[in-house]
Image 1 (tube, one colour):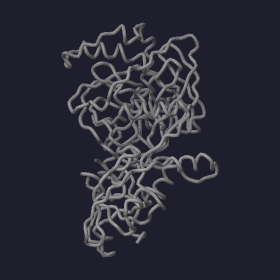
Image 2 (spheres, helix red, strand yellow; image 1 turned 90 degrees about the vertical axis):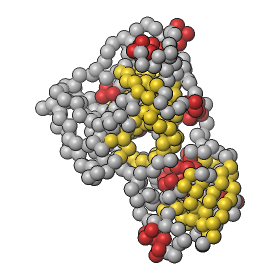
Image 3 (cartoon, one colour; image 1 turned 180 degrees about the horizontal axis):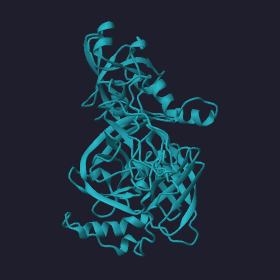
Image 4 (cartoon, rainbow, N blue to C red; image 1 turned 135 degrees about the horizontal axis):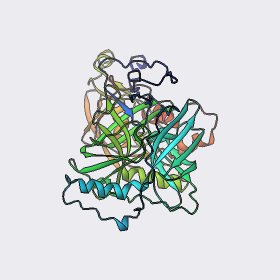
Length: 436
C-alpha cells in the first residue's frame, strides 16, 4: 500500500532570473512549476543588482549582497527608544501619525542580521527580547551560518546562536553590546488579534535596514508544511497580513497599533516569488514562548499523537477497499502512544480532529501541532464502514528531541523522525498545500 503514497510536501520554487551587475553572475535558477502557488520564505534568495532589484526565492537561501550593491543602511535610528517615553495614539488607524508613533517606538527593537554561509553572505531581521542581548529570529535566517553579525542601526556586533527549533522555524541569537543600551520589544498578546486589525511589519527587506510597512490582519489560523534543506518545517496558526513582507524581512517584527510584538515575519505566498500582499507571521505568543525556552536551555516540545500516517486518495482508497476517499490512514502506532492508548488501531482512517476535517496526513500533522501538549482532542475515524469517535490526550515529542540530541550521528532532522515515526510517513497531500 505504501507504494501508492508519495511525498506531496511543497518545495518553494525559485523565481525568475534576477538582473544583476556585470560583476555578479548568478546561476540560472530553476523555473517554478506552471501555475504552482507556493509559500516561500520571506528571507530567501533575492540577488540585489546595482540597477534593478528582483526577488529570487529559494529553499534555504538568503538575500545576497554583492559588493556593487547599495547596502540600504539608514544610519542612526534616533534617540527615542523606550516604550515609556512614546505614546501611541490608536484612535485613528488611518492617520499617518499612528504609523509614525508605532515606528518610533518599535524600530529600536528590530535589528538586521548579517550571515556568512558557504554560499556567500546574506541578511535577515531579528527582534530584541531583553537587555541581555537575546534576539529572536527565524531559524532559516541563521541556518548554515558560519558567522553572524547584528546591526542595531548605529553599531554592529558579533552574534552567537543560543538555540533553535528547526521544526517551528525559530531561533535565538545573542550579542554582547557592552555598555550600549538595548531596547527590548514590548510584547503584545497575539491571541487577541482579529481580522481587520491594523499592523506594521518591520525589518530589512533586501537589506534595507529600518524599513516599515503597514497593513491589516487579513486572516488568522493559517497552517502549512514546507520542505527545506534540513527537512520539513511545520507552521501552525499563522497570522496572514497584507503588510509587505519581502526577502530580508524574515525574523522581523509584526506589531500592533500600540507598537507591541504580535508576530515574527516568516513567509510570503506568491506565484512569482515577489511580494504579492500575502505574508505570514508566526504568532508572537508562540514565538516568545519558544524563545524563552531556548534562552533557558530547555527542550522545545511539541504535541504528538503517536502514529505513522499516510494520505488517503480516491485512487488508493479504491484499490485498498477503504470506505472513504480522503483522510489519514493509520499505518503504524507507537507503543503506548496517545493514539494507541485511546483505542485507535492500525488500518483506521482519521477523518476529523475536533471540528477540523482531515483530508491528508499533512492535515493531521498540522492539526495536531496546532495544539499543546496535554490537550484532549476528539478524533473521528472510520474503522471499516463504521464511524467512531475517540478522545485522545496529546503527548510530547520530548523523547524524540532527547534522542536526537544524544545521537550526533543520526541521519535526517528531528522533524523527519517525528513525521516518520510518530506523525506521518513520507507522503502528503496531492498538491502539497495545507491550510486550516
